[in-house]
Length: 170
Image (cartoon, rainbow, N blue to C red; front, side, top):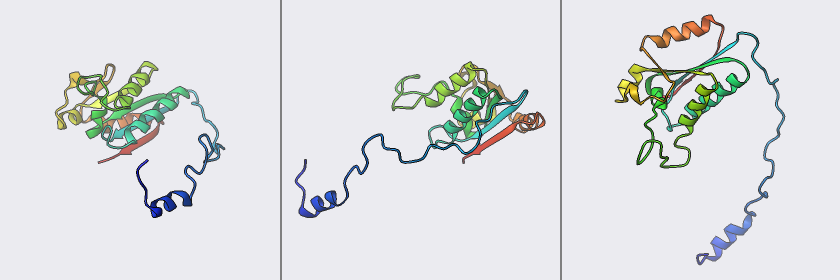
């Protein structure tokens, strides 16, 4: 350990660190609302307008849509605007598929799981074009859509009575 001044030593010992041993509960575990499952024909629709890795919004939206799918909801995610970048299979450094940092492929892996389990993923072609991304760079199973489809998809799922989760980041 580096040489510490008396004040640095005093500061370190004022409060025990860590104050709780590993594994200590910091929060209660009571779930307040029932664990709802889908009723026959119910749908869950997620809109994502968030940039991959710039916040947790996009990743959490995918996790929520996956949870809804596993609860029995027909579940779909629509990426548009900068959110379209979440759908790229070409993520990686120095090569595609190689993670330059832990979690770089969380979004890719989660979308692949969502699709494999029966979820639908839509991606706006215009959102791709805004950032120079190509349609052929999409994760396998992602459905490319026309820019005018964003509004009509929202209408489609609203008319089906879907629970709509809309995330937005600019």
